[in-house]
Image 1: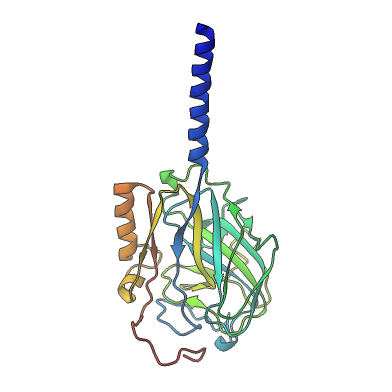
Image 2: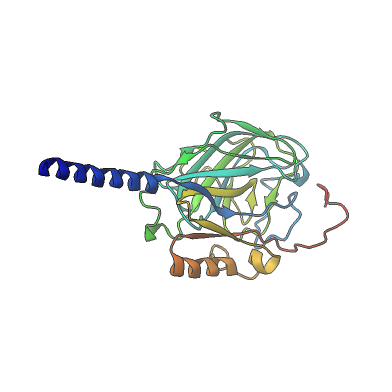
Length: 281
């Protein structure tokens, strides 16, 4: 009888351990980075923008069969991620025929072996209609073993997309204050982990407007809204010292990874905008 009771007690402990382990595995999607959509390019208040006439000779025509490598910094990390492409201010369908997500090392260079293929409903290509947006499927981040690892703080993702054909007016976020990278027209380089394939730089984000990661159910997102003060005017290029960035660091110091702070500020934003907002304005 004693042996039976001990066996049952052991089974109970095992079951409770299993239940707790399964509960710990439950994850929700939480937005971890955003860049508020605006546009169409070049409308907006970019800061320290290089001359992009070599990359986009006719701004109203947008991209022409070329690749983008957008650098973004998640506020919290997860073992899985998704990102969203936006054509909110486009007038033509935008077709993406290659998309990848990797870990930036420096410049446009990625950690070897980190670049993962992104799919859309299982397909490697997608067409985003004018005014629309689309999320990728789930992407496993093999380099994230522990999302709470302090060594991940400040690390950045590289989102690479190839636009096939002509995009027409491009949805973008002008004041990215983060150096990202562009390829010349006629180049499909999203799989390339080196920096040689992306010889041009930009301080804006094109087409990509959100990243979400898997996180425990109690995790919440805090969204900062505003105009140029929130967007980061007068802060440091690549310095991550906008006030929402500073606020995020304080939140993490007090609450760990329970909150993600994301920025939806737009320089020059208005509560009451112009009567019309078109590709020409």
